Length: 385
Image (cartoon, rainbow, N blue to C red; front, side, top):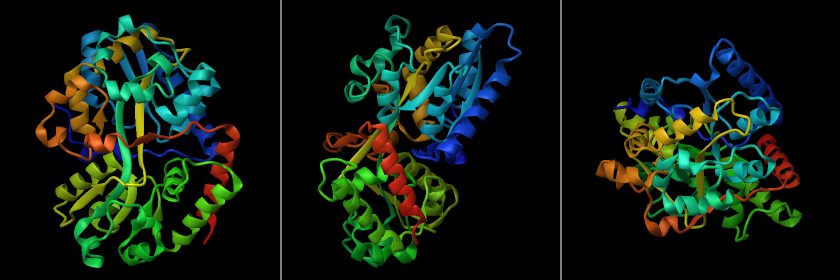
């Protein structure tokens, strides 16, 4: 059994936007780090370099793979897919396995030749992948030729139920009104509201809240989105994609737009800390953003054989099930579901009902010009008082 994820809350962090300069610095350091790890390897075919979110592959999993295959694993972590994308774009990254967000990252990387086309005959366990998730993934990976879904989750409202009810009985907890309607947000400002520091999550949600079909950099549409955010900014205590779940668990915040996995982690932290905090999670009726982190092999991987062996290993039902227990995210492995305890399998935060999954939306793949406009708008919003 893997250790509890509660001891490592960083695993649930999903930061999706960062400054370009910071990404380049981190990327170069990551490349240098990986090169140092493998410089002394006499046989690169017996070394596998993995680049992924923290705790996506727990130590017990790594140890089991190494024992079975004789392949040594070096595990480097990133905290932002933009950082990972920059690392890969530099070239000669020396990585063999990467976990990458489906949209927008894979959507723009696959046409650019970042990833190796998968040889399905070498990863028979990839057949265990959830069919619905595979269909959604085809939006960015036509024919499912490059990516195998690993973990997935949603973005919604995390809140301390009793605090919210005390301040506003019958609060609209199933709506983004909780944060985006200033009259309602004002009621909860005192107990603490936070939103993710991620334009890729927040701006599309606000756009749909305003009735826009999708986020666009059309001047009038984007101005309306940013005006709504400026309107409620006085009531927001924190804009961050890390640490906010700890503050929820401690009762320092009472309401957040956050990730489903972070809601699970915050609950565990509150329980382990014996805090009298009862956290709930809701899927906003206006928008249910959905993300998929997939397993991909860099096109210039020095050890694709080891990468195929690793994908086939982690897609075993029992391995995928253990990781879901460890990290609190939904596995992309449908064959793992029967192995999960009812408390996990029937947890609507981890595995939403079909009525919610039907409303899942993947982030659009934006053009470089659109991305620059959104980043600038978000940075200006954060900088304003």
